[in-house]
Every structure is written in structure tokens, then in C-alpha cells.
Length: 225
Image (tube, rainbow, N blue to C red):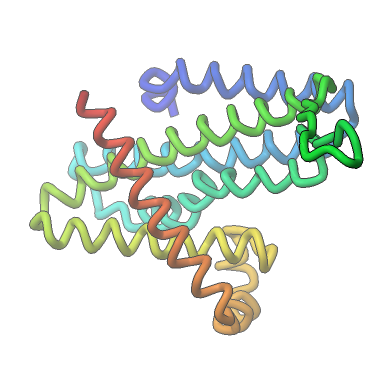
């Protein structure tokens, strides 16, 4: 834990700042979603901690860190799950159109001047950026571990497999309302619900897998710079 703190203390301080913002917004508005955002950020940073344990275990040449790898895989979907948090803005009015005259083809675009509506957008966006950057950092560390042992082709398919499983995890979390720990506590029910995906479930998993892969590629491009 000490090694993790020393390496990522700046990120941890930023997370505490984000929690403070969510707490303030919750106290002002009373919207429980800000509490959920804080919880999601906590879940999102766990993969970075778990993969860090894998790195330390490998350096010390201890036993194979299969438990830490499984924990990383189980919790990694939480890192990209927060992109679905934007659905909470569906009922907010950011803009609307007012007709100038019923006989005129012209209309005016009016933007909301409710500061709390825009604040919610920014808080959710900030949480998403924080979660996905931390998540992709853990995925990058995982990829480096794989690259040391296997070829680039195998590494690609492993990352693709992670992205695919992540998409399944996000679908299960958002639409089926299961959590990461349900893999252990409710495996049969989770498996039963997952097997009944339907066409929409398959389509969602495909496009979300592409989203994860493209986003991670973009992250790697910026990281190399």
C-alpha cells in the first residue's frame, strides 16, 4: 500500500478532491447520484492497485500473482463503466428551441442558465476522465507484463479479450444491475442472466468493445508522446 501511495499520491489527492466536490454537490442538491459517482471512482481505482500488486509480486519473484490478476480483471470494467453515467443527464434541459413566430421558419436556440445542470455535466465528465485514465494506466501495466512473456500477436488478442470481457461486464452492470463481486456471490444467477443477452446486448458489447480498444489506443499514443 505504501508503494502504491508513493507512486500515485498525486492521483489519490485528485480523487480525494473529486470526492469533496461530490460531497459538496450532494449537500447542496441532495442528489444521491453524487454519492454513487464517488463510489464508482473508488471502484475504478481498484484495478490500478491490483495490477500494482502484480508488478511488485513479479519483481520480488514471489508466487504467480493469479489472485491479483483475477481481481484486476473483475474490477477493470468499473474503470470504463463511468461513461454510461452520462445517461443521468437525459432528464436535464440544456437547450431548447423557441419559435419566433408561428408563421416564421426561424427559431431561437435558448441555453439553460441553471448552473447546477452544467455543474452536473462537468462533475460526471471529470469523473469519467479520471476513471478511464486510471483504468487505462492499469491496462497498460498489464500489457507490459504480457509483452515480456508473449509475442505481439498474442498480446493483441489478450488485450482484445480484456476489452470484450470488459464490455460484457459493463453491460451486466448497467443493464442487468449486477456488481463485480456477484461473480463470487451470485455466479449462477449472473451466468443465467448473461446468457440471455438478446440482440441488443450483443450489439452493445460489440460497439463498447470497439470503444474500449480505440480509447486505449488513443491513450497509448498520448502516453508515448
